[in-house]
Length: 199
Length: 257
View (cartoon, each protein chain N blue to C red):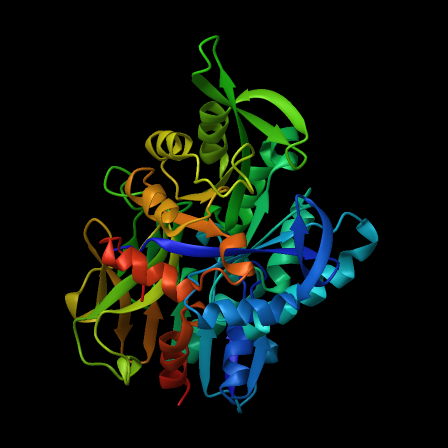
């Protein structure tokens, strides 16, 4: 069972439907007590504002729930804002995030390209990882974001995307993974990536 | 590198996809989700649903078709039309829309853009901009003015000033429609799109006027648009999205094939 963290602001409907269609069972987690032992993997989706999202995660106890689940070995996939929340801090509202991956979340420099970075762009995988199984190198994925993850350690960067400069579009450290794009909105390769994670 | 986007626009009345002939006499052309799926398979990068349902009584119906689109379409889609409040944003996003567009309501109360961006992020706040040129005595365009209420009401506001104010408040993308070009099939308003692309730092979706493949190439190459909205070109079966993209690729426009 895939647990999908519901913190109100996220657009989780499409993530939920994509995973349902892949024939995995899902359960929405809106509070820590929604957890049960059938949940083997977690997804933290997201569209929204980092500060608002962290406030909700902290107030509902979901922030601690996520940290404890990861500490006990449960895999976690952050999507878009959900990926950014995996890092230590975000410049979006200067908020402290989950701190599951070392680094920060800066904003794109407007002098380089338009902000938000919105549309289809290519992901270059810089490390072999099971998330990329059956997905060709440089495949297009759909991005919508103004901030991006900047992991401190290069080993946590799994894939990069060029938007004026290369930024980390796929990150991972053991059971914690994150993708900046929306796999649920990226056509067949996006669905493949979700399948790779849920397997 | 970021691709240039081809974005089909689908008009929706109640819960049906419709075609308008000269902005009236809607005829049903299918189901919004089915049509969206068809265009996705044909290579659409994103979809825009223009909800033309006027009646407030149809709110639940509206959420149903949006949910169905979200279930069946695996590319992003925006819903535009009739959005007035933050609560409208919430309901449409929860139903599965990726972005919500506002036009008249933002002109009436610009703070709506800021409020929506603060809660949901500016990337899902789309500003609908309807423009009409203002000419001098020599019939040269001196500026463009903002219109609201589907092009029926003149605001007196300058297009560039409003676009800049709106993006500062929280609009993360602009769909710019040239009212005088819309439905004419003689090309996008290149000058206007170029001007907006220079003056604001969010993606611009050019709308209104596409009739031939050359028009789309032109709005990317000369107008510097980030995305091109297509409607009648594809709805009437004149072109497929695959054909449009093959043509653009030949012309060295960076599109996703």
